[in-house]
Image 1 (cartoon, rainbow, N blue to C red):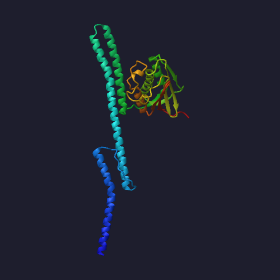
Image 2: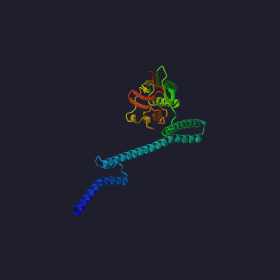
Image 3: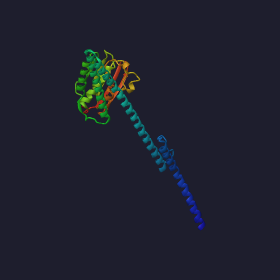
Image 4: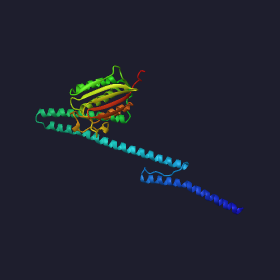
Length: 306
């Protein structure tokens, strides 16, 4: 009996050892992968173990954790790249008017008569206004990035569009400005000043990047629970290489394609999208020769009557 017991105990120990090794094997593999991730920083590494037991679920959870870490690091890296590019672009855009102001100040200082001085002072004033506009746009985008948003309230989109187009007509008689407005109010949830800036920016974009004689048609309508504001023109269209980036900051078409001498900060359409999205809406564009259409959708302040 003693021999049988010893033999039985040996079998049990061997079985326990075998089971322990089978359990430890995937855990050791998991530990090696984790250690490799720690040493190399390569979050693309994955543990490979197929089973449906607790170990398999642990491996799956470990891989999902690595996926999330990799996604978070990728998003952070992309954000940092965009921030560095934005700062570099902003610095470049501010450097231009500053250089012009300095040059005209030196010209005024050296001018022997009042004619050059008057011209230089006029240019200094114009470049100062341009820089002030750029700084204002940058500050607005910074506030929106920091989620410093105003509380939306009911605003009549028809009135905002009417006033904005009136301003555009005063600014440019070379374009044909058309309106397509409903008889009743279209009340959206937004901020009146920021909504006015959205429409003004869209109209200014059309004025700057289309030739004289272009027709710009602005309309307001409702679709379901949304208000739709459209600004469409029959100009030459947005170049295909620029179209996917029109709402990015400083991603405007180059000066050779501009049809106006008006200075653009390159932030107008970025502000359009940022403001509209801050109020739960969307801003989109489609373009081809003879038709460019910007579409803004905003939530209605109240559902339309049945």
